[in-house]
Image (cartoon, rainbow, N blue to C red; front, side, top):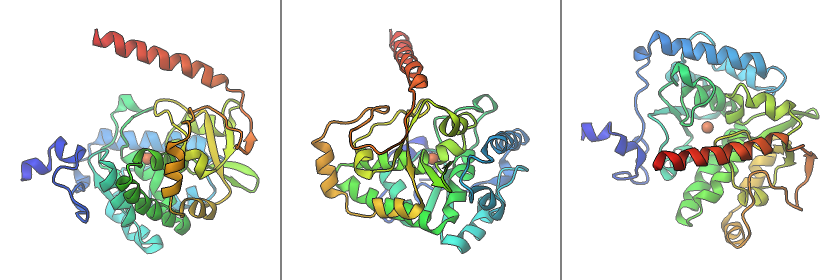
Length: 308
Ligand SMILES: [Fe+2]
């Protein structure tokens, strides 16, 4: 069992897992085993972000990093963060070895446990890593979980996700998470700010999302987002904007069952597509997206060639 419990198969499939088994995918952080190079990677990533997040991250982000003692010095100790986070919102971070299946992920969220990758990216992956590591998860996600309304939203999302899994609609509800918790923008005092962890932990996308003329920023609309596919390999072409976390909580609280049916009978919207129902806040030029299309086609060609 010990061998099985640490195998890749254990963490990438739901084999052996059942609802209620909250510890099935979690692992100890083993903080003492991080190497100097890994701590240096954290320091560099942290420093890079600090140079670009001032004036772009939502206003409570920096104070929250400080309050949770997530600092530039070293990879944080999860148990120390949890001592403070539990006090603030009743949430805790738990270490996982990488991406885990959807249902156990939803169940952890529904129980106020946020899974964080235990590992940190390699130095050659500074700009982009597909699988979420401790920097993306702890720097990007955890500080926002110190906000009670946002934390309540993520908990409700976890419950909604479990329901979606029963209804065969995981792909649909995941779009809500992607366009808010990962890539959401928020309006604060009439300024656009970032709250999505995918942007907060990316040195280039946080500039693109706020400063670029290319993407279109659209008012958050859960029904529209359920229909909207996303691209995981590039900057977003459309960003969805909330006014505050209460709006996000209220918009995603209702039972989505009828909306799933409606969505399944509607045409799926492409990542950069606009819809007549959109309340557009800033219309983008789409300049970056044109290049993105070419880059996607090139990646596809390379994939096909590598299979030959
Ligand atoms: Fe994430």
